[in-house]
Image 1: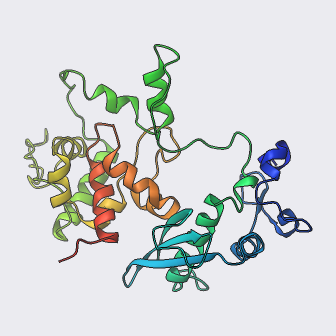
Image 2 (image 1 turned 135 degrees about the horizontal axis):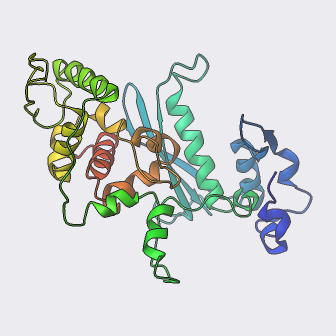
Length: 305
């Protein structure tokens, strides 16, 4: 187990200190396969800790959006129950989806509420102390950095999830070598044909030349490379208009950052606040990423009227 900030710094341990109450005694150990053992303080104990410090405080939660299969909840922490709605010290969102889990699959609203409250309490200082020293960095840079070397830009791209190939996409285009149809592309073509029959394709299909054996390949089935190129050529606004919600959740984020190789749907579940960053602050050249993020946000918070 990595060293916690709580044990590393006396100042951190003194944050929200209550004499006679040691929250670590209530933490439980979690051991996931392939990961180090971790300590987790359940939300009910975070609430207790908060009440000990602020007995007149208030924990409020709001349903931002609720559908048959998804819930988005915001939680806010107030130092006093009489504070105005905007006078909170911490807030957090949580989005959960219906699943096949027999115990909690149908309780996605309650799960989203609990997760939002737990995160908001952590932001307010009730659990933040137990973060590991040197844990993973933020998925997105939140303010200007300090240039330390000529390679800073490339290092920043690698760290925050924008692949170097996306940066290269901004360079002058170079002629592409002939595309060969391999097994992976054949599978993609089959998937595209199935998606097209269901009305879930993005963009217009590309025409393909006859095969070398004289048999014509169906003109409505593009190669994977052609389809990717067609999507890449579309603007974010065009993709938002043509991409379905299901397709948006399956868009994969490139790079080696925290969310590298994960789908936008996974990001929405694991870190809902990061979806907004991908929607409006993502600096890569893969327009499908911000488009997918905006579609998910619009689904979660549809426009009024």
